[in-house]
Length: 295
Image (cartoon, rainbow, N blue to C red):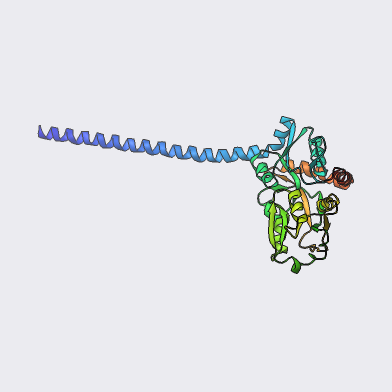
């Protein structure tokens, strides 16, 4: 009996051990399965995201609209007319792109430093706001071909064109730029002894210059000339000049990475309007309109 009981005990123990082992194996299998599911879901999510990103052009055409992010306070590139319509040579370019795709154009007005994040997140399809094509930005987004190149000016209070005409004269002085722009970077790199002063809007910066609170502000040539023309004699272009190596900037459309087909479609429009002279005409018309509006 003892032998039988002992055998039964061993048998039951063996069954328990086998059951335990089987349970452990099943648990490991479930955990492994979950791990694979998560990995696959993660990979699938990435693939799906890439698919969605790559399908941006299709989404635009299917929705029937092109959503463009801009900041409409940068005449002559983007601003509003008396009827609050979005105008300017950048907005003209946006319309040409929308027309080429056979869709309607929708403009979203936002802060300049919010446009690239909006492009990346898919809130807008393109960013068109006189964006300077830089290697730093190219790490985050893709650029179209250049549609314009422009010099950079230092705008000062009238009477100070010669006062602030050298880097030495600007040392220790506040020099303004719009927040998040290439002009901010330019001041830091080309005028390291000056103090960078940033605001969100150019009209506010121009007022700071006219009031004598800052020495000057750095802007694209077209914008600077427009600010001077509408300042009632309060502003002028400084005799200071950046070198071509320091400040010869080209402007491009901003597009989320992974959309080569959309980049190609945008480039096709840019190549056409820059070669046939229509962009230059749009630019000239925008300069005149901005001047007539006192911008």
